[in-house]
Length: 241
Image (cartoon, rainbow, N blue to C red; front, side, top):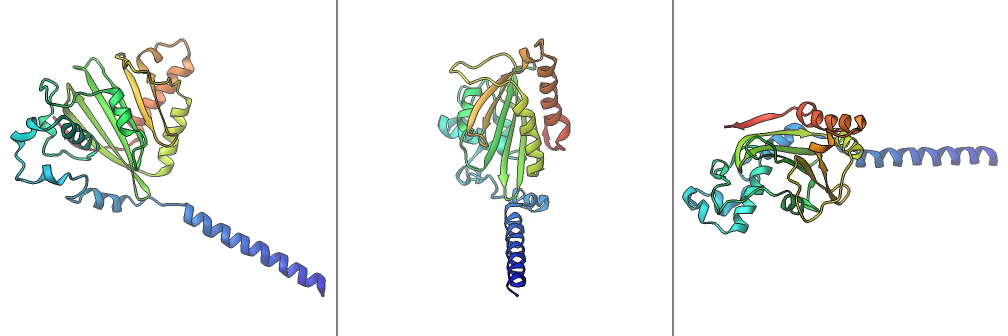
């Protein structure tokens, strides 16, 4: 009789642990609801900076703004899936405007709440152009915004909504890249600068010289990185000049 009771107790113990383990897994697992995120980003209030987005704030006043406000609006623009009222006003030739900086980009996004990863590529030979990719967590999804600009003039904007598995696959590629610590002087060869908040660090990759490397593995990994950003993500285009 004692033996039977022992067996029953053991079975109850394992059954309890199995149930609690499954419940814990359910809590950890978070399913990405793309439609829910589309509703959120489609709301007028999303990414809004009320005092500047109201009709009473005229576009003509844009160039009179304090540089810190101008910078804030710049980063809001590259995080926005669609255009803002200021998108077509950015211009490197206006001294009042924000000027793209790798060092400022990573400092701005490092340890930023809800930003998993931010990447800036450039400058290239297409009129000193840059690309930015900002991966922002919204509920169980990641909103990725992609901007392309020449001399701070936006010429392209798009976005995508990814799940954690897709983001994990990008980090696996990044983990294989040969990264370098960021120094105070920015590189003007074509480079990728990262604010990696999953790992709480910033770093860069010299893409121009990396593709010329004797190491075929290095070039192959860089091409995988390009391929992921260009082909593995399904982009929804919102603006092209």
